[in-house]
Length: 389
Image (cartoon, rainbow, N blue to C red; front, side):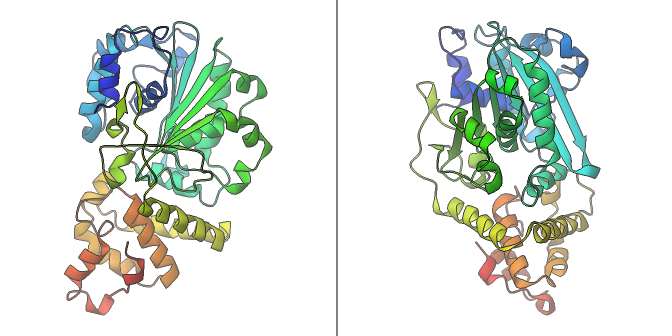
Protein backbone atom coordinates (compact mmCIF):
# COMPACT_ATOMS: atom_id res chain seq x y z
CA UNK A 1 0.00 0.00 0.00
CA UNK A 2 1.16 3.53 -0.67
CA UNK A 3 0.07 7.12 -0.16
CA UNK A 4 0.63 10.50 -1.79
CA UNK A 5 4.30 10.67 -0.73
CA UNK A 6 5.05 7.29 -2.27
CA UNK A 7 3.11 8.28 -5.39
CA UNK A 8 5.19 11.44 -5.84
CA UNK A 9 8.45 9.53 -5.34
CA UNK A 10 7.54 6.67 -7.67
CA UNK A 11 6.57 9.10 -10.43
CA UNK A 12 9.31 11.65 -9.83
CA UNK A 13 10.93 10.85 -13.20
CA UNK A 14 7.69 11.25 -15.21
CA UNK A 15 6.67 14.69 -16.37
CA UNK A 16 3.02 15.56 -16.99
CA UNK A 17 3.34 14.54 -20.64
CA UNK A 18 4.38 11.02 -19.66
CA UNK A 19 1.79 10.79 -16.88
CA UNK A 20 -1.04 13.35 -17.20
CA UNK A 21 -2.30 15.28 -14.19
CA UNK A 22 -4.28 12.80 -12.07
CA UNK A 23 -6.75 12.86 -9.20
CA UNK A 24 -3.88 11.92 -6.89
CA UNK A 25 -1.95 14.97 -8.09
CA UNK A 26 -5.06 16.97 -7.24
CA UNK A 27 -4.98 15.68 -3.67
CA UNK A 28 -1.27 16.49 -3.40
CA UNK A 29 -1.84 20.12 -4.39
CA UNK A 30 -4.90 20.30 -2.13
CA UNK A 31 -2.65 19.23 0.75
CA UNK A 32 0.03 21.76 -0.22
CA UNK A 33 -2.57 24.52 0.20
CA UNK A 34 -2.26 23.99 3.97
CA UNK A 35 1.38 25.14 3.97
CA UNK A 36 2.24 28.63 5.16
CA UNK A 37 3.40 30.24 1.91
CA UNK A 38 2.88 33.78 3.26
CA UNK A 39 6.56 34.76 3.42
CA UNK A 40 7.62 32.69 0.42
CA UNK A 41 4.92 33.58 -2.12
CA UNK A 42 3.75 37.07 -1.17
CA UNK A 43 0.82 38.74 -2.88
CA UNK A 44 3.16 41.19 -4.60
CA UNK A 45 4.12 38.31 -6.88
CA UNK A 46 0.66 38.40 -8.43
CA UNK A 47 2.16 39.60 -11.71
CA UNK A 48 5.46 37.69 -11.38
CA UNK A 49 6.39 34.22 -12.61
CA UNK A 50 6.12 32.57 -9.21
CA UNK A 51 8.65 30.40 -7.42
CA UNK A 52 9.59 26.72 -7.62
CA UNK A 53 9.57 24.22 -4.74
CA UNK A 54 13.37 23.97 -4.83
CA UNK A 55 13.84 27.74 -4.54
CA UNK A 56 11.60 27.81 -1.49
CA UNK A 57 13.58 24.93 0.05
CA UNK A 58 16.76 26.98 -0.28
CA UNK A 59 15.41 30.04 1.55
CA UNK A 60 16.12 30.98 5.15
CA UNK A 61 13.29 30.09 7.50
CA UNK A 62 12.20 27.17 5.31
CA UNK A 63 10.91 25.41 8.42
CA UNK A 64 8.27 28.14 8.81
CA UNK A 65 6.49 26.62 5.83
CA UNK A 66 5.24 23.88 8.18
CA UNK A 67 3.61 25.65 11.16
CA UNK A 68 1.66 22.71 12.62
CA UNK A 69 3.86 20.32 14.57
CA UNK A 70 1.46 17.40 14.22
CA UNK A 71 1.66 17.48 10.39
CA UNK A 72 5.09 19.06 9.89
CA UNK A 73 6.99 15.81 9.28
CA UNK A 74 4.58 14.47 6.65
CA UNK A 75 4.34 17.84 4.90
CA UNK A 76 8.12 18.15 4.87
CA UNK A 77 8.50 14.69 3.35
CA UNK A 78 5.88 15.51 0.72
CA UNK A 79 7.48 18.85 -0.10
CA UNK A 80 10.95 17.35 -0.43
CA UNK A 81 9.63 14.60 -2.70
CA UNK A 82 8.41 17.30 -5.09
CA UNK A 83 11.18 19.88 -4.94
CA UNK A 84 13.83 18.21 -7.09
CA UNK A 85 11.75 15.81 -9.18
CA UNK A 86 11.29 15.94 -12.94
CA UNK A 87 7.52 15.82 -12.49
CA UNK A 88 7.08 18.72 -10.09
CA UNK A 89 10.43 20.53 -10.30
CA UNK A 90 9.25 23.06 -12.89
CA UNK A 91 5.89 23.77 -11.26
CA UNK A 92 5.80 27.38 -10.10
CA UNK A 93 3.86 28.55 -7.05
CA UNK A 94 2.11 31.89 -7.33
CA UNK A 95 -0.92 34.03 -6.50
CA UNK A 96 -0.99 33.06 -2.83
CA UNK A 97 -3.59 34.77 -0.65
CA UNK A 98 -4.35 34.32 3.03
CA UNK A 99 -7.10 36.01 5.05
CA UNK A 100 -7.57 35.30 8.75
CA UNK A 101 -10.07 37.44 10.66
CA UNK A 102 -11.29 35.95 13.98
CA UNK A 103 -13.60 38.89 14.68
CA UNK A 104 -15.61 38.24 11.52
CA UNK A 105 -15.05 34.44 11.52
CA UNK A 106 -13.09 34.40 8.24
CA UNK A 107 -10.44 31.79 7.44
CA UNK A 108 -9.48 31.75 3.77
CA UNK A 109 -6.38 30.81 1.84
CA UNK A 110 -5.66 29.82 -1.75
CA UNK A 111 -2.57 29.09 -3.82
CA UNK A 112 -2.06 28.54 -7.55
CA UNK A 113 0.37 26.06 -9.08
CA UNK A 114 1.50 26.88 -12.62
CA UNK A 115 2.64 24.16 -15.03
CA UNK A 116 5.14 24.53 -17.89
CA UNK A 117 2.43 23.97 -20.51
CA UNK A 118 0.44 27.01 -19.33
CA UNK A 119 -2.20 25.07 -17.40
CA UNK A 120 -2.72 25.55 -13.67
CA UNK A 121 -4.09 24.02 -10.51
CA UNK A 122 -5.90 26.36 -8.11
CA UNK A 123 -5.93 24.92 -4.58
CA UNK A 124 -8.12 26.21 -1.77
CA UNK A 125 -7.06 25.56 1.82
CA UNK A 126 -9.38 23.49 3.96
CA UNK A 127 -10.33 24.10 7.56
CA UNK A 128 -7.24 24.65 9.63
CA UNK A 129 -7.17 23.72 13.30
CA UNK A 130 -8.22 27.18 14.47
CA UNK A 131 -11.48 27.80 16.29
CA UNK A 132 -12.15 30.56 13.74
CA UNK A 133 -11.86 28.07 10.89
CA UNK A 134 -14.30 25.67 12.51
CA UNK A 135 -16.71 28.50 13.33
CA UNK A 136 -16.94 29.44 9.66
CA UNK A 137 -17.68 25.80 8.82
CA UNK A 138 -20.66 25.75 11.15
CA UNK A 139 -21.86 29.11 9.87
CA UNK A 140 -22.65 27.25 6.65
CA UNK A 141 -25.52 25.61 8.51
CA UNK A 142 -27.55 28.82 8.56
CA UNK A 143 -25.96 31.02 5.89
CA UNK A 144 -26.34 30.44 2.16
CA UNK A 145 -22.82 31.82 1.82
CA UNK A 146 -19.93 32.50 4.18
CA UNK A 147 -17.13 35.04 3.64
CA UNK A 148 -14.56 32.45 2.52
CA UNK A 149 -16.90 31.34 -0.28
CA UNK A 150 -17.27 34.90 -1.56
CA UNK A 151 -13.49 35.33 -1.45
CA UNK A 152 -12.99 32.04 -3.30
CA UNK A 153 -15.01 33.18 -6.33
CA UNK A 154 -13.19 36.52 -6.43
CA UNK A 155 -9.84 34.76 -6.19
CA UNK A 156 -10.61 32.33 -9.01
CA UNK A 157 -11.76 35.14 -11.29
CA UNK A 158 -8.64 37.16 -10.56
CA UNK A 159 -6.24 34.29 -11.14
CA UNK A 160 -8.04 33.04 -14.25
CA UNK A 161 -7.40 36.41 -15.84
CA UNK A 162 -3.66 35.76 -15.55
CA UNK A 163 -3.67 32.18 -16.85
CA UNK A 164 -3.72 31.27 -20.53
CA UNK A 165 -4.36 27.55 -20.20
CA UNK A 166 -6.89 25.33 -18.47
CA UNK A 167 -7.50 25.28 -14.73
CA UNK A 168 -8.13 22.37 -12.39
CA UNK A 169 -9.65 23.55 -9.10
CA UNK A 170 -9.03 21.41 -6.01
CA UNK A 171 -9.52 21.43 -2.27
CA UNK A 172 -9.61 19.17 0.77
CA UNK A 173 -12.19 19.54 3.55
CA UNK A 174 -13.64 23.08 3.45
CA UNK A 175 -11.21 23.72 0.60
CA UNK A 176 -13.22 21.35 -1.58
CA UNK A 177 -16.39 23.23 -0.71
CA UNK A 178 -14.67 26.47 -1.75
CA UNK A 179 -13.39 24.87 -4.95
CA UNK A 180 -16.92 23.93 -5.95
CA UNK A 181 -18.45 27.23 -4.85
CA UNK A 182 -15.84 29.31 -6.70
CA UNK A 183 -16.25 27.26 -9.88
CA UNK A 184 -20.04 27.55 -9.75
CA UNK A 185 -20.15 31.28 -8.98
CA UNK A 186 -17.23 32.52 -11.08
CA UNK A 187 -17.69 34.51 -14.27
CA UNK A 188 -18.62 32.73 -17.53
CA UNK A 189 -15.18 33.57 -18.94
CA UNK A 190 -13.47 31.95 -15.96
CA UNK A 191 -15.78 28.94 -16.09
CA UNK A 192 -14.65 28.22 -19.65
CA UNK A 193 -11.10 27.70 -18.37
CA UNK A 194 -12.11 25.38 -15.52
CA UNK A 195 -11.88 21.81 -16.81
CA UNK A 196 -12.40 19.92 -13.53
CA UNK A 197 -13.20 20.52 -9.86
CA UNK A 198 -11.81 17.93 -7.44
CA UNK A 199 -13.33 17.87 -3.97
CA UNK A 200 -11.71 15.67 -1.30
CA UNK A 201 -13.89 14.79 1.72
CA UNK A 202 -15.58 18.17 1.70
CA UNK A 203 -18.87 19.31 3.29
CA UNK A 204 -21.79 19.97 0.97
CA UNK A 205 -24.17 22.85 0.36
CA UNK A 206 -27.73 23.89 1.01
CA UNK A 207 -30.48 22.42 -1.14
CA UNK A 208 -31.09 25.84 -2.68
CA UNK A 209 -27.50 26.04 -3.89
CA UNK A 210 -27.32 22.58 -5.48
CA UNK A 211 -30.67 23.10 -7.21
CA UNK A 212 -29.57 26.41 -8.74
CA UNK A 213 -28.99 26.59 -12.49
CA UNK A 214 -25.38 27.69 -12.02
CA UNK A 215 -24.63 24.56 -10.01
CA UNK A 216 -26.44 22.31 -12.46
CA UNK A 217 -24.45 23.83 -15.34
CA UNK A 218 -21.18 23.09 -13.50
CA UNK A 219 -22.01 19.71 -11.97
CA UNK A 220 -20.52 17.61 -14.79
CA UNK A 221 -17.07 19.00 -13.96
CA UNK A 222 -17.26 18.12 -10.24
CA UNK A 223 -15.55 14.99 -8.93
CA UNK A 224 -16.04 14.17 -5.23
CA UNK A 225 -14.03 11.74 -3.11
CA UNK A 226 -14.90 10.55 0.40
CA UNK A 227 -13.37 7.81 2.59
CA UNK A 228 -15.48 4.93 3.90
CA UNK A 229 -15.78 6.45 7.38
CA UNK A 230 -16.23 10.00 6.12
CA UNK A 231 -17.47 12.45 8.72
CA UNK A 232 -16.61 15.85 7.24
CA UNK A 233 -17.46 14.91 3.66
CA UNK A 234 -20.89 13.60 4.63
CA UNK A 235 -21.94 16.83 6.35
CA UNK A 236 -24.75 18.40 4.34
CA UNK A 237 -23.90 15.91 1.62
CA UNK A 238 -26.15 16.81 -1.26
CA UNK A 239 -25.63 13.98 -3.73
CA UNK A 240 -24.90 10.29 -4.07
CA UNK A 241 -22.42 11.08 -6.85
CA UNK A 242 -19.09 10.57 -5.16
CA UNK A 243 -16.28 8.06 -5.24
CA UNK A 244 -15.46 6.16 -2.05
CA UNK A 245 -11.77 5.61 -1.30
CA UNK A 246 -9.97 3.40 1.18
CA UNK A 247 -7.86 4.81 3.99
CA UNK A 248 -5.37 3.37 6.43
CA UNK A 249 -6.91 5.48 9.18
CA UNK A 250 -9.95 4.90 11.35
CA UNK A 251 -12.83 7.23 12.19
CA UNK A 252 -12.03 10.94 11.91
CA UNK A 253 -8.44 10.05 10.92
CA UNK A 254 -9.72 8.92 7.52
CA UNK A 255 -10.05 12.64 6.77
CA UNK A 256 -6.22 12.78 6.61
CA UNK A 257 -5.06 12.83 2.94
CA UNK A 258 -1.77 11.17 3.85
CA UNK A 259 -3.66 8.01 4.85
CA UNK A 260 -5.58 7.54 1.60
CA UNK A 261 -4.44 4.35 -0.15
CA UNK A 262 -3.06 4.53 -3.69
CA UNK A 263 -2.27 1.73 -6.13
CA UNK A 264 -1.42 1.95 -9.84
CA UNK A 265 -1.44 5.77 -9.67
CA UNK A 266 -5.04 5.91 -8.47
CA UNK A 267 -7.01 5.73 -5.24
CA UNK A 268 -8.10 2.30 -4.08
CA UNK A 269 -11.88 2.21 -4.25
CA UNK A 270 -13.75 1.59 -1.02
CA UNK A 271 -16.93 -0.41 -0.58
CA UNK A 272 -19.47 1.87 1.10
CA UNK A 273 -19.95 4.71 3.56
CA UNK A 274 -20.25 3.16 6.99
CA UNK A 275 -23.25 3.43 9.28
CA UNK A 276 -21.77 5.98 11.70
CA UNK A 277 -20.93 8.43 8.91
CA UNK A 278 -24.42 8.08 7.47
CA UNK A 279 -25.85 8.66 10.94
CA UNK A 280 -23.92 11.93 11.30
CA UNK A 281 -25.19 13.11 7.93
CA UNK A 282 -28.79 12.17 8.66
CA UNK A 283 -28.57 13.90 12.05
CA UNK A 284 -27.46 17.13 10.41
CA UNK A 285 -30.12 16.93 7.73
CA UNK A 286 -32.83 16.29 10.30
CA UNK A 287 -31.67 19.17 12.47
CA UNK A 288 -31.38 21.57 9.53
CA UNK A 289 -34.86 20.57 8.37
CA UNK A 290 -36.45 21.06 11.79
CA UNK A 291 -35.11 24.54 12.55
CA UNK A 292 -35.20 27.89 10.79
CA UNK A 293 -31.93 29.58 9.77
CA UNK A 294 -32.44 32.03 12.65
CA UNK A 295 -32.76 29.18 15.16
CA UNK A 296 -29.68 27.48 13.72
CA UNK A 297 -27.72 30.71 14.07
CA UNK A 298 -28.72 31.02 17.73
CA UNK A 299 -27.61 27.43 18.32
CA UNK A 300 -24.23 27.93 16.62
CA UNK A 301 -23.68 31.16 18.57
CA UNK A 302 -24.50 29.33 21.78
CA UNK A 303 -22.26 26.37 21.00
CA UNK A 304 -19.24 28.55 20.31
CA UNK A 305 -20.01 30.68 23.35
CA UNK A 306 -19.67 27.46 25.35
CA UNK A 307 -16.41 26.60 23.59
CA UNK A 308 -15.01 30.04 24.33
CA UNK A 309 -16.21 29.88 27.93
CA UNK A 310 -14.27 26.65 28.37
CA UNK A 311 -11.24 28.16 26.67
CA UNK A 312 -9.47 29.17 29.87
CA UNK A 313 -6.07 28.88 28.21
CA UNK A 314 -7.12 31.19 25.35
CA UNK A 315 -6.18 28.52 22.84
CA UNK A 316 -6.51 29.48 19.18
CA UNK A 317 -6.78 25.93 17.87
CA UNK A 318 -9.03 22.98 18.68
CA UNK A 319 -5.94 20.85 19.16
CA UNK A 320 -4.75 23.02 22.04
CA UNK A 321 -8.31 23.47 23.29
CA UNK A 322 -9.04 19.74 23.40
CA UNK A 323 -5.83 18.99 25.32
CA UNK A 324 -7.31 20.83 28.32
CA UNK A 325 -10.81 19.48 27.80
CA UNK A 326 -10.70 16.61 30.25
CA UNK A 327 -9.81 18.92 33.10
CA UNK A 328 -12.69 21.19 32.13
CA UNK A 329 -15.35 18.47 32.08
CA UNK A 330 -17.09 19.91 35.14
CA UNK A 331 -17.34 23.29 33.44
CA UNK A 332 -18.69 21.59 30.32
CA UNK A 333 -21.46 19.87 32.30
CA UNK A 334 -22.29 23.02 34.19
CA UNK A 335 -22.47 25.07 31.00
CA UNK A 336 -24.82 22.80 29.02
CA UNK A 337 -27.03 21.53 31.85
CA UNK A 338 -29.70 24.18 31.25
CA UNK A 339 -30.01 23.61 27.51
CA UNK A 340 -33.23 22.09 26.27
CA UNK A 341 -32.88 18.30 25.73
CA UNK A 342 -33.12 18.45 21.94
CA UNK A 343 -30.41 21.10 21.59
CA UNK A 344 -28.19 19.38 24.15
CA UNK A 345 -28.61 16.05 22.38
CA UNK A 346 -27.67 17.50 19.01
CA UNK A 347 -24.69 19.36 20.46
CA UNK A 348 -23.25 16.21 22.00
CA UNK A 349 -23.73 14.28 18.77
CA UNK A 350 -21.96 16.97 16.77
CA UNK A 351 -19.09 17.52 19.18
CA UNK A 352 -18.67 13.81 19.81
CA UNK A 353 -18.31 12.94 16.14
CA UNK A 354 -16.68 15.95 14.51
CA UNK A 355 -14.15 17.77 16.67
CA UNK A 356 -10.60 16.35 16.80
CA UNK A 357 -10.51 15.96 20.56
CA UNK A 358 -8.13 14.35 22.99
CA UNK A 359 -8.30 10.55 23.33
CA UNK A 360 -10.27 10.55 26.57
CA UNK A 361 -12.08 13.85 26.11
CA UNK A 362 -15.68 14.38 27.12
CA UNK A 363 -16.58 14.95 23.48
CA UNK A 364 -15.22 11.67 22.17
CA UNK A 365 -16.47 9.46 24.98
CA UNK A 366 -19.31 11.24 26.76
CA UNK A 367 -20.58 8.03 28.37
CA UNK A 368 -17.20 7.24 29.90
CA UNK A 369 -16.61 10.74 31.28
CA UNK A 370 -20.13 10.97 32.67
CA UNK A 371 -19.70 7.60 34.38
CA UNK A 372 -16.33 8.60 35.84
CA UNK A 373 -17.63 11.87 37.19
CA UNK A 374 -21.15 10.81 38.16
CA UNK A 375 -20.56 10.74 41.91
CA UNK A 376 -18.79 14.08 41.92
CA UNK A 377 -21.44 15.86 39.91
CA UNK A 378 -24.64 14.20 41.15
CA UNK A 379 -26.40 17.50 41.56
CA UNK A 380 -25.56 18.48 38.00
CA UNK A 381 -26.10 15.17 36.28
CA UNK A 382 -27.26 15.41 32.69
CA UNK A 383 -29.26 12.73 31.02
CA UNK A 384 -27.25 12.22 27.85
CA UNK A 385 -27.95 8.54 27.38
CA UNK A 386 -30.10 9.28 24.35
CA UNK A 387 -27.46 11.55 22.84
CA UNK A 388 -24.42 9.31 23.22
CA UNK A 389 -23.05 7.82 20.02
